[in-house]
Amino acid sequence: MNAEHLLDRISSDPAVCGGRPCIKGTRMRVVDIVEALARGASQQQLLADFDYLCAEDLAAALLYAARATEHRVVRTA
Image 1 (cartoon, rainbow, N blue to C red):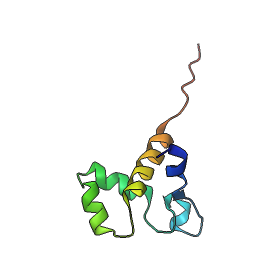
Image 2: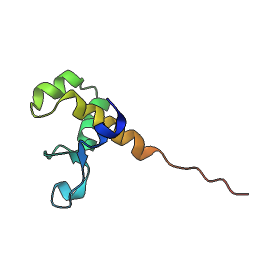
Image 3: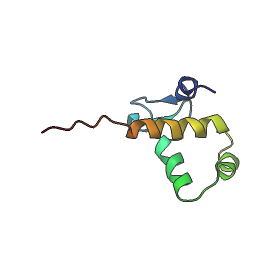
């Protein structure tokens, strides 16, 4: 699955969760998915607990978070 297709699964709407990035059509925030995985939840657990999510949603959240941390480093003398 290509990255842009995955990122299409993420939306930011000021009327939903204060504009924080969420899985499109849900109120599941990217940060909640990433934090759950960081704390040891498995993808299978998340998919079982939140039956409206699919594996591509989890991959999209991780990709979105990874890209959000990417930034240009500018060095000056």
